[in-house]
Length: 354
Image (cartoon, rainbow, N blue to C red; front, side):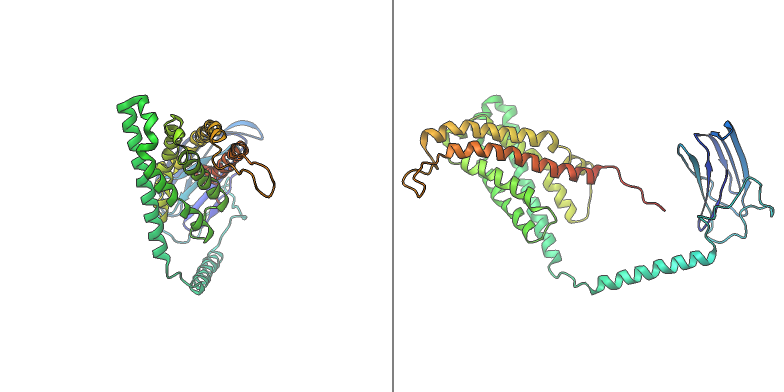
């Protein structure tokens, strides 16, 4: 069955058959020819027709083939109303109007008027909402924050990479003493991300930010910063390297988002590199904690000794064993959050019905 839709400025005619295979379409400014093969009620058939339009149309129709039908959209050259579809006054036998999609001139004008009224109402509502006088100041702050963090982690990554190529495995043992100051600065500054989320400056959820930032600062300041024995271990290199690679794509992505720019390769990297790096970073942090437990047990550092209200000695090493479980739970929470964001930004877009 054939149906047509007369509207402004497009014409659409779907061919409804079981399995459609478009063989050929040929179109001039007036004539439109189609040859297609499809499986209908009477089996496989060749469908062919020719239409001579009333007025000129664009020479390139848009064809979309599905399993059930063939949709052909033809655009008029001039946006005006036709008295009829074809040049011949008598309607072709194979052509039937699709009244579900039919629009006459009065309907279209009413529809256009409703859209204009809706647009005006929306503008009125937006004008009633008070404008934020600090909008540009907030945007400037976020741009500078993300830029500073990007430069800081870039310096760490380049420094570690260059040293790795020059010194090889020997660079593992003095990573902390080489980049610790910059890492301290970046992760202390990262505490602002929790504040930004708390006051609503950014739309990022609070819990993933707290889990990541406090977890990293715990490793950096408590495990590595307080134990000189841990600072020369090779695991420090992997912890710092995984952290810096992730941030190389996260901060420039946020910085460009502040000014309304989306670079698709950067978006893909931002929501893809975490897939291997987050588990690897969590594993490196776990190794770091496991290696520090004997040192804390031996030195008794940060342990709560007698006397105390409970009259017991609480070993910090025991707390670290419990923290290991919380670490992997934190990796799961952040990975789940990033997976949802990845589906939102990189998943298939739902097509709007017209």
